[in-house]
Amino acid sequence: MYKLLYSTDYGKYYVGKCEETISRLNLKGKVQLILTSPPFPLNNKKQYGNLTGDDYLQWFSGLAELFSSVLTPNGSIVIEMGNAWEKERPVQSLLTLNSLLGFVNNERAGLRLCQEFICYNPARLPSPAQWVTINRIRTIDSFTHVWWMSNSDFPKADNRRVLRPYSKSMKRLLKSGKFNSGRRPSEHVISEKGFLSDNKGSISHNVLELEQIDENKELRLPYSMLSISNTKSNDFFTKTCKDRGIIPHPARMPLELASFFIEFLTDEGDIVLDPFGGSNTTGFCAERAKRKWISIEANEDYGKQSMIRFEDPSLKAKIKTEENNYGTDARITELGNS
Image (cartoon, rainbow, N blue to C red; front, top):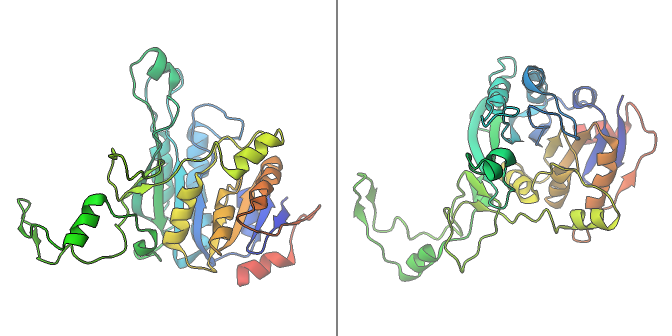
């Protein structure tokens, strides 16, 4: 059983299990991007609901065929996953990597790994706490895996839409018009004009840092990496939830992480699907970028709180709520076929 909870100018939010809902929405071959952060493959239960161990592996790898079936011929799947640790042991579990490998290696899905990204959060709390802050025998687990997969070797993508600001040294080089050309120790030959073309920014790296670029300090990591502000604690959604006494979804995808892949892998009017919608970060970012979106979430409470995102005055979105709208809905077909 599933139902349409609300809709906006660009998208729809459904409450139901992702497998049933996707199967009923007439989306085969129509989705340009599946962007999601599923329940992480942990070795212990969390309040937002997750399978564990072998049960998770079997369930998650089985989703690959369903997800692949709704992609366009050049569509993409982007999945963010955190690390798992063995229960009561200072040993990192292979559950995350095995889950991602099982997903992409599902032969019936016909997927391949286009590129792996690392999402690094320097402000993340020490984890696993027992082994990092008490026993002091491990370092802080501060990144999540982001895998970009596709049913094609050449999915739609354009890195010119996600350029990073130039570094100070690159700005000086462009201004002076001079640099050391010639053969490098690596045997690469740099032409006299090789670095003098102003491409309006640097190509992003595949390490994504959740910290805003500050031109007045030396960065620990490459300047051209995707450096994005981690504003979970003070964004409109979080502040509004706090004001209303609502406990927000505990595992929200960073807004700018979602925006990066939406801009990188889709055009205006394309359909973006999040099968584990939660607080609807994906839908919000898709709406902002004028992409059509569909989000699905099994927990109706998370669906209701996600509507707060569309109250953000910067978005100027119109929400239409749906009451007791179970089963099929004519507007599903409208979105899927448009």
